[in-house]
Length: 280
Image (cartoon, rainbow, N blue to C red):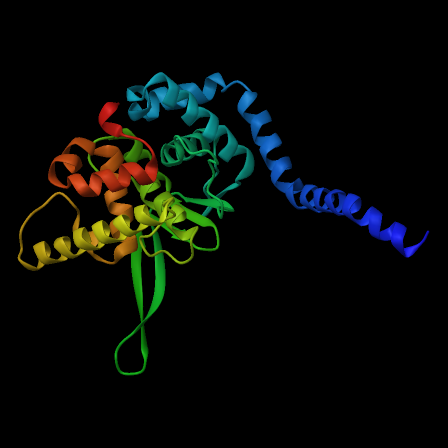
């Protein structure tokens, strides 16, 4: 074949080459979407429904369409993420379902609903002790030990105390829920280290988010310095990441109070989570 013939064929071969490369790159994503669609088509087991009925009263307050969404998202999460018992805890279906269902609240109305970095959930039979090295200002470090009900790691692990998971689900309106808190950190960590800035679509929306969250965070710190009570727990003043997680708990568990006391903050969280608990 002459060089001229090769040149004539080139415009015909390039689109085919581009399609081939695109299909190869999209292959894993398409396979994941196909597998998730197959999981969502499966019926939600009756035993799992009974867990939600007995253990998660907040589920009953959701509109029917959101109940269905939550169940399907929980099914996907349970099909993809291993749950590992620690310190002798034997993980049961009840444990897995109750964690997954509460985590799925954060995924409602999302087109691509998943915790992208999540690799495993570790469950402890009680609050667990974490030791950390903390700089002491003298060029050395001191070891501190803290008792925790939950943690979220950037490497894709969520660590939870099972009694605290149960308590968070049983009382849906006290503003405290360890599953919501730690999985909010997972969303935050999808954009890098936890900094209180989860992905928000649109540049103007991100600018507004940053301005609102910073103003509310500083207002909380000022209130605490003055010794004034308020809705947002003092732990939210630790850093912007904890502020986002703490206010996420309030958003899902005490939306009326949060909307009344902090309307701009509530609007930003509603945009981030793409839902409005005031209508439940």
